[in-house]
Image (tube, rainbow, N blue to C red):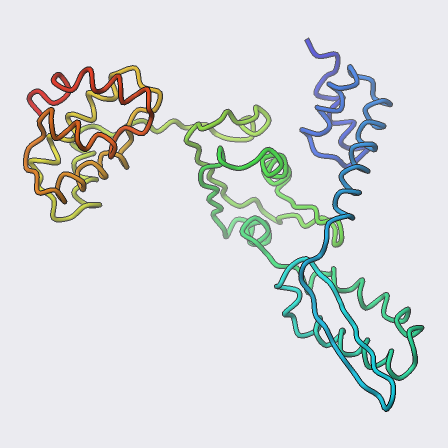
Length: 301
């Protein structure tokens, strides 16, 4: 049993401004000791900051100016080409080079405020999460296959789903006036954190009925034989009854029908099924299981 409560996690979040998963981990690492948890977050936060500070900025702008016998070269670095190509960013590099050529290197100090402004809202590139927060209830945000995202993004998403806001260190917190509709999908390639699932209305979508699957295949693969499609759908449903690591989905049904149609097949027998099995079965161990049951799978298909 954990030696801390949900209130402890919330209190640590409020006192440090950290995310829920980080606060929970800090309390786990320190056996629920609040002071030690704060120190743990500071140490790991400093390590994270140091890692970022050592990261080389690979983009930027170069400006060269000659003033009589004096020449100046200014290199202004940034991390993204989006900023590097911004007209204000390039203009700032030109201005720094011109001032240094005219007044010497001491002129660089005057541009400190100008450089700081480069991290303001004007240079912020909005992505779908921030766009949805700004749009509020006028937006529907679809995050497809969240199970393929890393833990850091999932932790970041908690703030969006719990408070419908995004915190940007250089700018501050941007909060939605009214919550947008958010839809998450997952294929269960990994387990999602409970903290994320608690913020969602869970809905399971299983395999469609056979008739519906036939309709889907005919829409996604127009021109294929309906008779062949029905045979493949029947075989795929039998595959799903086997103990497979990765049962075939509708996408695999479509791929199998397209493969057979491309080969000019009009029937699904055991031999052609084995020859084209790679279109529907994607795991090595599953292939062995299926090959041992092909006659039963294709019989009457």
